[in-house]
Length: 442
Image 1 (tube, rainbow, N blue to C red):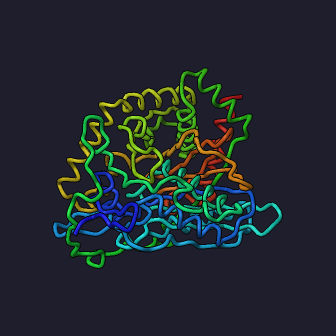
Image 2: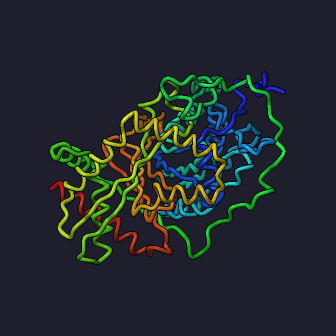
Image 3: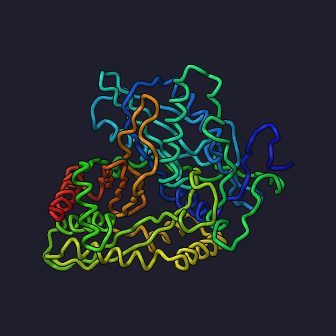
């Protein structure tokens, strides 16, 4: 039996890559999925959204998979026929989506059941017609940047369904169904990517997740608090301009502001050593492939900061940028990919992976997942994409911050564990960091 199903454009059957494998193991010890939220202005029906989800699921292969184990107990992505789950709630307020994101983050995936993605629509019934679309993914199949492309494809599909001719509303209207995306290691320059579809015999999948304990939703005392905010176009431009003048980056300035806010919240006059983790987009470093796949093509780096009571935001921002520049070289990034391969080949247990990630990356005071300036459009027929918040993820860091720049505005989403920091403290931290950022550029 072969991996190719001749009745479909693309059939999925490939082993997990090294990072995908480790993220799957990590998820078995600590729920590891993330959510991105799109704020949309304009009218569309639940039926239109359901049709759009069907189209994008046909386009992106990893939206159709579950994870199964072969006879050697190695995990594979295997296609399964299951529609993307859609939950619809009536929008109550501008902050309502934050509570729904908290619920999504607290609800783990069952990795043996397809698909490893789900959607929530916070639907508006008023004249303003503002709605939020929350896309939640198991981290083994995707990263934040790839889900921004998925959100674009969903909105394109809704816009296509609104046109008079239904004949164009097919997967090809969004482009051909994509091939199965390779893993990171297959795209390192100099490597020969494996031919993924059709050349490998289908293994026998003999053991499913019923043989393993299913990760349960988090306990009441381990809930998450989510808060979102944004900068005006004028403030966003000022931050960009001032960051360039200070010979640093917007990412450096944002990380510095939140690190200093954490330092202030610790209420100590003594110098403090704080750590910041920054995911890194690998797409600019990998060999040519469709850059807009739903896929997992990231790395990460952790920076350390010795902060005194009078630490200057721009000094911290420059230090962070310099440390990341040392990490973000092709040689260092490819070395990390090969080390990850080597680690995965040792068949570590979920607990070993949990501890390993904590020691190397996630034992940080804050994780700042900055997706940068998004290149996707904002107008889709009569629909306007007004904001993207996130990614919201529970890495295991004390705080996780998602940052995006859409159009001329910056958007922030902070998630904190209530067992570590109360909802009020998290909101104060968020507000103080934004205040420090604005203060630094005025």
